[in-house]
Image 1 (tube, one colour):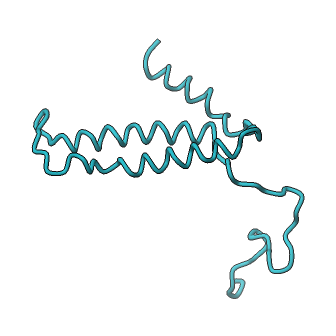
Image 2: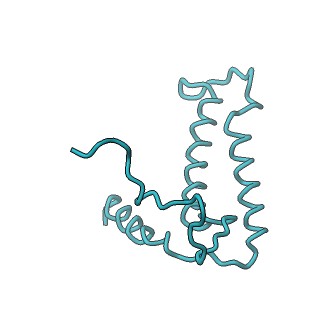
Length: 115
């Protein structure tokens, strides 16, 4: 089986993952873990500790290799977050209806004269 076929099968199997409900047990701890992961990813995206280091690997500065690798890691972590934890910390009351000044955007027409 080719790599393209494997990628397409993996994508197809994960394309429905957004419908999977997020368990409510341990929501606070999960939210705190994802917040910590986000802070670490943002904090280390710029390699502060490599400033002033002139090391060159394969013709490019080491800090650039770090940054590219870190962005690949950040993309993988975001994929995990999007497929497994999207919606953590967002509490909604699905039974509430729009009230007062709230309107459904589909019912609002733009201004101007009709042709």
